[in-house]
Length: 106
Image (cartoon, rainbow, N blue to C red; front, side, top):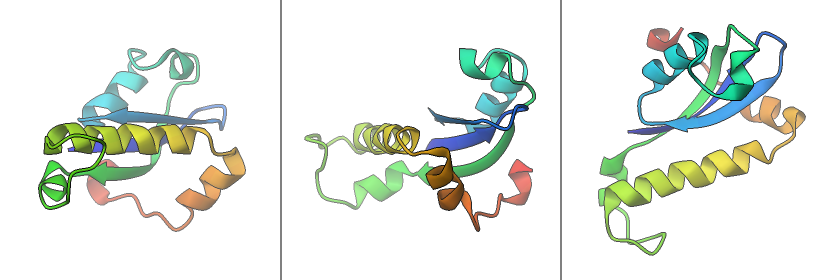
């Protein structure tokens, strides 16, 4: 599974990232072993994510110039991460509006 996520930092800024293990990555951010950006803005809180399943890419036609579903899944997630990073804070807040964080990520 691949994830694109948005964190809210202690200074109310937003950080967007990509990972294959969301809980482990959030823990790394909060222990100061995540991105440089979040290191000085602890603690961080997960506020949004999108998941990309390799299984979904086994069912879809070839895209991203590759037939390997795992590679296509990662490429889709990192492409989405890049697109979200280009959004303004206002656009990110709109994207996040109405998103309900599942219980196991609270």
